[in-house]
Length: 343
Image (cartoon, rainbow, N blue to C red; front, side, top):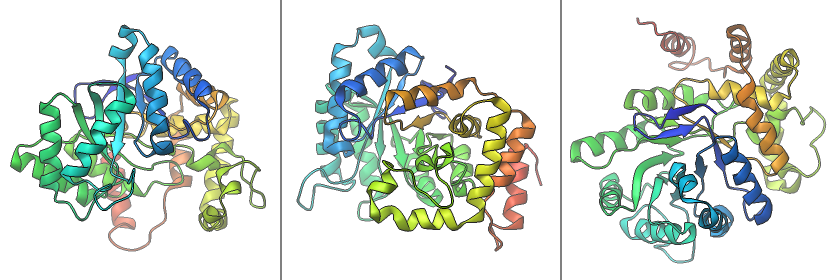
């Protein structure tokens, strides 16, 4: 397993993180613990949770695993969680106010059975709470020893920049990471979020590296495999139909299948390897539902893509935007940045 720093922070994290969103909901506790065992044995050290996953049960499952782990193993781990969304009823049971964050953090620490969480992430933007209030609370939590590092999740580039600017101006704790959706079918964050993160030293922790299973090759133009989240949730069908109708989707899958055939591996491994090699990525969050899925995902560490193969995947997956400033001009700027060039 390769290790990288968490953005500009000094902590080292493995190139692959273990996402726990399925724990306690789609993945029973016994198998969840087997997955953590397998992940740690492979050299992984970043476990990512959130209070809202399975209504807190995901954190409890991780906490019970931590309770039986030996001290050396626990010390090597970077345990991350998130807070922002409602865990109960009432007007103060959600958001990023000092009141809710204090309650949410203490509840997460209790469920995880730890005194300190290594990375505490703001799960999404809150338009009703000032950034000063959020960062003042997080600064006090760091001083109290409850948090080591602070991260962001699901924010835009201007929001990311506001957090950094306020932190520096007010001398408050500065975020070190950002968790965005990022994969071969969702590259729009490269327009502004990725440059903003790199400029400010925030490491990327991408979620959904397989685009909800699309990049495994199991979807076709005409069928949805039984037992998938899309098959079980009719409300997701609008997004499914949109993705199916876009020719870019099939161009990406064709290119992915060709590269996978050249390596003799499943398509998903190539998709994860591509993402792991993108600029600014500290660790890719693996969202496996089963032990077999996790084993297959971890095997992406053995896939080494050539420059020509990456170029093919880049070309097929490039989001098409014709208008200023994200069209031709934006693409030229991104190309120069990726290759270290200047205007």
